[in-house]
Structure formats: C-alpha cells, structure tokens
Amino acid sequence: MYAIIETGGKQYKAEEGKIIEVEKLNDKEGKEVTFDKVLLISDKGKTSVGTPYLEGKTVNGTIKEHKKTEKVTVFKMKPKKRYKRTQGHKQNYSVVEITSIK
Image (tube, rainbow, N blue to C red):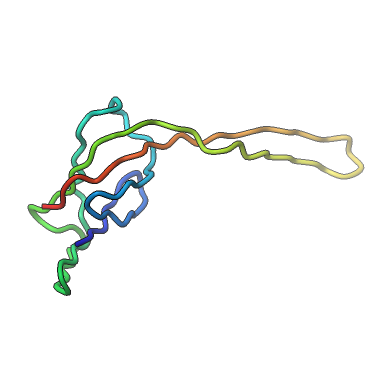
C-alpha cells in the first residue's frame, strides 16, 4: 500500500514504515504529523485518485530529525568586467517516518 502526498509544494510517495525527506516542517523532532493532502492511494491493485485531493484520507508520520543538504556553491562572473561573486547555500529538510495510511 502506498500513497502520493503533497507537502511543501512537492509530491512524495509514502509507504508505511518507510522514511522520506520532505521540505522543512515547523514541528519539533519526535512529534506526530498528519498529511491531509493525499492525491492518490493504491492498495492491492485498487487505485483511488483525488480531484485534486481524496476526502477523508490522511497519512500519518513521525518527525525523526531536521537536517541540511550538502553545500551548493553559487559562482557568478562577468568576463572582462572584474566581477566575481561566490555564495553557498544549504537547504533545510525534515526526515519523516511514515507510520500509517488511512
């Protein structure tokens, strides 16, 4: 059984017992979260698709930790103009373990 959920403007495939990495959630580690924007649920060959979301269906999970991705270096340069800029970026995300699909 799996579900497609939407959070943080992105879509993720969620299965019971699996760990997914989603855009940073504002809750603390160890807290239970509920995703109510369920787009699709597939169970033993039966697929339910929402328009755009399924009514009354939720996916529950537990926040395991908050992390940052590896650093991405952004470098800008304009040739012959003595212009160079270097900047780094680390994106925040949350690690969530899916506990149930209802």
